[in-house]
Image 1 (cartoon, rainbow, N blue to C red):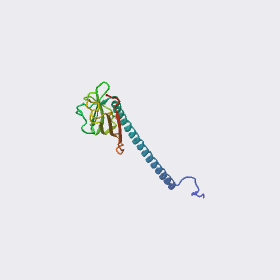
Image 2 (tube, rainbow, N blue to C red):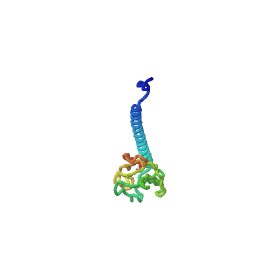
Image 3 (tube, one colour):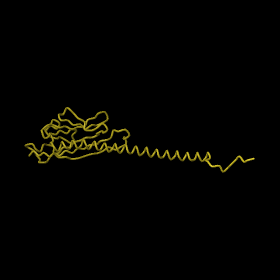
Length: 190
C-alpha cells in the first residue's frame, strides 16, 4: 500500500499563507498612509503658495497705483489730514487726477481686497480661494507735504500690512501669510 501522506510536497501551508497576507496588508496600509500624507502635504503647500501669490498680486496692484499717483489728503475719507493710523481705506489720485480707492470688505467669512476708480463701483483683487483677514494702510506724513503751508518736506509713504489665509478645503491648519511693504509716490509736486 502506498503512503498517502507525502510530507515533502511543494506548496505553502495555511499558516505560511496567513503570515504572507498579514505582511502584505501591513505593507499596503503603510504605503497608503504615506501616500495620503504626501498628498495632503502637497495640497497644503499648493494652497499656501497660491495664497501668497494672490496676496502679492493684490499688493503689487496697490503698490503700482501708489507709485504712479499720490495720496489724496483732501479726500473726505481723511478730512484733509490723517488723524491716526492705520487707515482702513486708501484713497489716491492717479496721474490724471482721478481718485483710486482700495479697501478690505467681508463677504461671509472671507475678506476681499477691492479697488474702485470712483468710490462706488468696486472690483475684487483677490480670488475666492484667498481670504484677506487684515488690510491696513499707514500713511506718513499725516498732512499733505505739498500743500502751500506744509509743515514738512517729506515724500508721502504708504505702508501696507496684509494678513491672508487660504479658504481651500483641508487648509484649516495652515498658518496665515503676513505681507508688509512701504511704497512712496514717484510724483513730486514741489
